[in-house]
Length: 333
Image 1 (cartoon, rainbow, N blue to C red):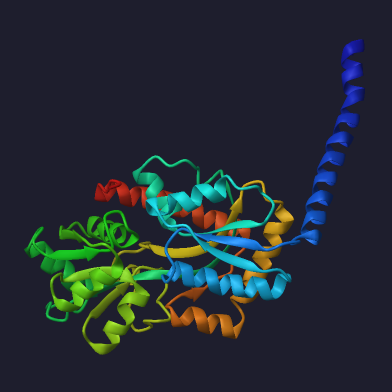
Image 2 (cartoon, rainbow, N blue to C red; image 1 turned 120 degrees about the horizontal axis):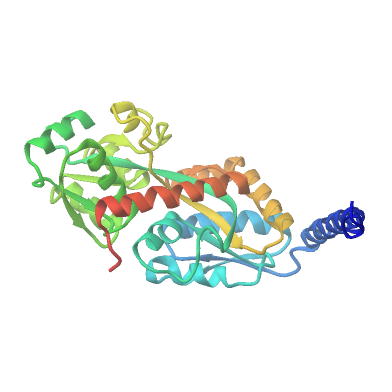
């Protein structure tokens, strides 16, 4: 061995030791931050106006965190640009645990597939935990002579492009889910976008459209009253809200899955110990009967998963909805 090689070899243990010390210091620093945090109120940024499901879920989570962390957790609504304004705000915020986003697939997976956004959903955030999920339910007007997906597909095939279905807007999850299903089934229907799900479901009840793949919470009351017939849900398992309605996968389309979720995310450089602490609190919340009851009242199924599990869901959502945008041809308005 040459003298220079021997010197390099001898230096390696020192480099390894220094690296280990750096990692150890970083871990200790993160743990210290978590122990000291929070010292002041935190805020949860909601990318939509007050009153909707995302806002309601954020307030349920904020109430729980306030009671557990010893500091107020405040909800701040920042609507606009399909949620990208709020999302950029959090992406650029200090990674100190005092700013979080109540995120959904809309601004983290769908809108970035339709338009250029000033953030990278996979790089600029530290996923914390999904508070709750909500599959979509395919409702049809009861005048339609169908009782299953098989019947609907056969009818649509006999009337290519003639049957109108609604959505909460071009590129909305309700639009992309239906577009992906129709593509999988190999049939065409006529897309009618509305400005919001409440308008779409009202048009379905009124018979102006014949089908709508809406949030379960939108479909359930009308399915129970008989004003809408629920044919399928888009999750891999049946919805707790509609236990007698089979999934799309059960009806001949194995692997089909689409759902919306609401989860807390922090800026990417937030200390892992803080992220872990909030995630554990959200997991505890989703097991609390009072919280579960509040979520159930708005049609949301509690989850409370880990940061690693949420990261996986986020990556899968980015892939899924990019495909939905491609299939539908949706473009930002």
